[in-house]
Length: 235
Ligand code: CA
Image 1 (cartoon, rainbow, N blue to C red):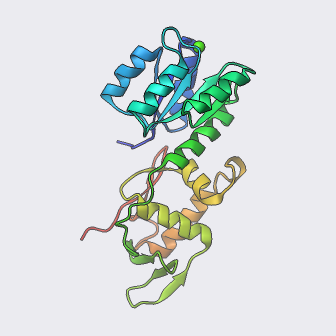
Image 2: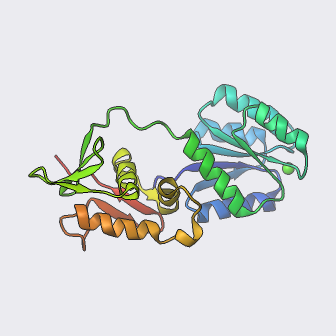
Image 3: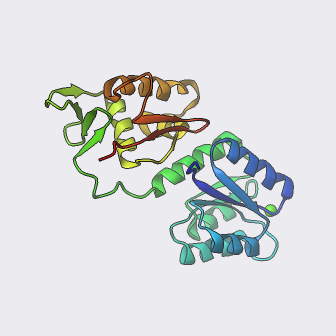
């Protein structure tokens, strides 16, 4: 089972809803769609998503009212409002009702993706406080304070800034498959696309540094179709 971020699409137009759900699923999210507020409330009772893509023009209870309800009853769920084209009033009210962002229709899928990632990053919980200053990763130990890898004999190996950030993300999310696009964005501070292979190259370098057998990686494993997962050593 892959632990992808869950997104709920609330959109009354069936074609658009299906397109969005399919697109988000292809991008590695666990996306589902509902047609109105009633179905949204039902879905929330079953399981709370990380983010809700909320259309404003809905039959019955509209997006503004649902956003207010969400802020009160599900404060951890991030909201991106989908506004009607050029409707500035909607945009402003959308943010006032507690949405994290808004996107006007029609939008480019890539733009939507960028906003979703940015909102998810902002709403991600702070790194676990119990994370010690040193974490065993493969045959090495990551020293978070000094930003180096340690050998068992105490020898230090320096890391580039991006290598350190990658290892730190893995250390903070043990046993959790991390989407390679997300890893790239979180560590490169720029948009993906042309740097698509950058994460893979960095992972290859890091494996040489920490794996016992880099050809058969055990600490940073590949999750097909998703990205990578850090598996802490046992004991
Ligand atoms: Ca609509």
